[in-house]
Image (tube, rainbow, N blue to C red):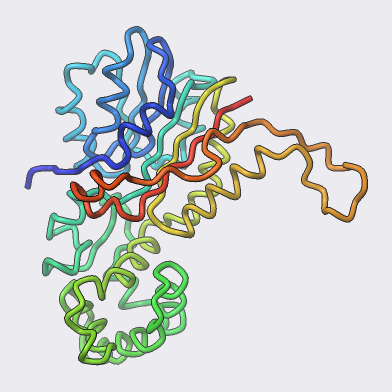
Length: 309
């Protein structure tokens, strides 16, 4: 299957990075290479480091970006390893970092990747196909309580307890193997009048995907590492698609943009904390109407930008 992915908030991200032709930049989530291509076009003597856990994505991006290959280093690693990778590449600090935290359209639309309830396939959902934990293991080995917790926390699924109970009941007879089997369980947990709703399974599939790929646990540490690797005036642009992701980014940015972190009841600062970034976006940038019409999957996207002091 051809790798297809529409880059979300592409123009806004590129403007936010404030690219210098001789600068060093990192795309933490290369995906289809849409953002990376726009960064590479603007570099002369600069350098771009392209991360992705997904080997399919990197392979496609290498081909798409082949005209700029002399400026690009591709890295098949988790962006949470950004500090280690930059050290290995003998890079102390960079001029800009971009992280688009959404799952790619290719991953969703490729049936055998097991991400989507729209296509029947073995439950998988791994962005990194070399890791052992997949969606099949989650739904077949996690306890009822743990499944309910994941669906409620990561998907805000109001029927999480009932769905978890039905999953456990189903697997008493046979393993829960496919996306359609999970879809049927989710749909059957709702009253008939809601069962034809197209997005009914979104929250459950999203929650399991987040669990499989450890997306929210990696993020706070990764954002700290990204900020630490910026040069003075360097920019960090992060696009989120989930309220918990956005909250993590917002909170981390706010902490780093604040001089004193002492409790309000303390009359004089004793923490000594000094802001090391300024917020370029006081409020997140969201897609405009024309982008929403062209790409319905951009609807929940939020872009936050910070600059190193």
